[in-house]
Length: 111
Image (cartoon, one colour):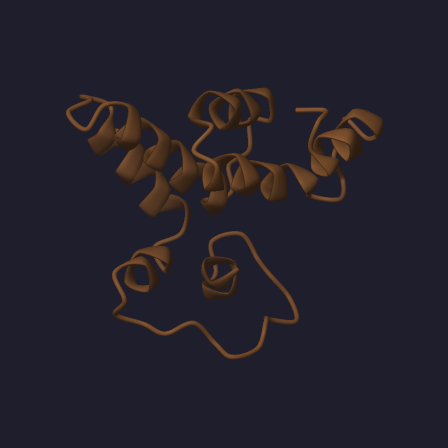
């Protein structure tokens, strides 16, 4: 983790009040480092939509027949039902980033 700039920031600020862990998780996912991404999610028991959908993605990639997938999907959708239409291409992302984000709201789904 410390090789990444985000990892260095997390080491300096382990409470992560800046939200760096979400950026680091995305970096790990982009390079398909499923283990590091999963470890990061476990370290920060985060109930955000991003964390829940990332858990689902990691479980799916690791084992497409995993019995935990339906529950992970339920948990992710329960956290933010607005995410799925964006993932399926049924809704377009806004041109501008939202000015505020609330847990479970549509703005959270767009970031």
